[in-house]
Image 1: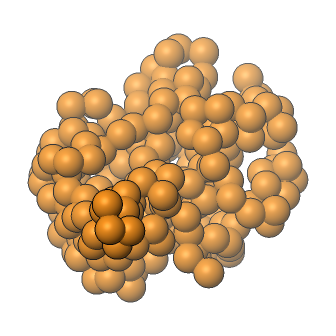
Image 2 (image 1 turned 180 degrees about the vertical axis):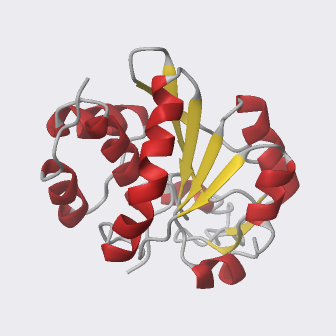
Length: 208
């Protein structure tokens, strides 16, 4: 089971012609479908969590359209949003699959801190993520407490990214149920599975 794309699947297909035949799915590019960043306020000082899909991704989508995005163009959009850090949650093999092997170096080339904390698609964070979070989590929380911005992405920008965005909120003192609501309000469909939701609900709440 693959993670859902943030866009409506039906939008990936062109409408039928007068003869009733459906034309080929269109190609989605950085120009035709500009990268969108959904914002979630975080912390007391005006911090923001941004949630989006994988910048520069290429390949088939669930709706049948083909992604042919430009990594540089998407990262320029992200840089204009001014994050202090970008958190990438895709696994190592997904860099090749999505053709974004230069993602980390290109983020850092734009003077943005890059954190790679892989999570298996449609799964909640596992022990590998938790080990990375011991060091990276406090750094990301400090960025948000200072009123700066953190961008989180996975492949489709829903399950993994939404789950980690909610975790950041919980550790900033937001009750887990409210954290889920805030993330889903900003990015409908986020935190896709019951397991991801249960993970957030079981997180210990941090201090405000």
